Length: 100
Image (cartoon, rainbow, N blue to C red; front, side, top):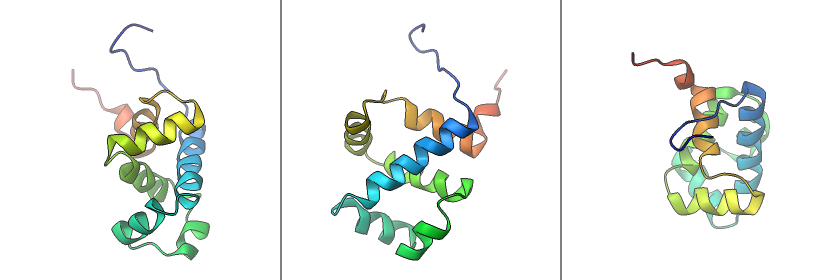
């Protein structure tokens, strides 16, 4: 991969990554209450909405609020630090934007 070039991931891969982020948040006693407070979501919402692209996008939005959270998630899952941003772009439709 050329430096600065973004590899494209599939919508299924992006959704899977976001679900993994959600699972990671649920297992994080410090961040889960912050996520619930920031989003207004309830524990029930986590179960019911886990398959909704809009909700999963908000999960990625939250993760990307703090670089240390991205690093912690990616390190825990042996993933590239750029992957959450790529997944967010796919789920939000931003990956389809072309500025030229």
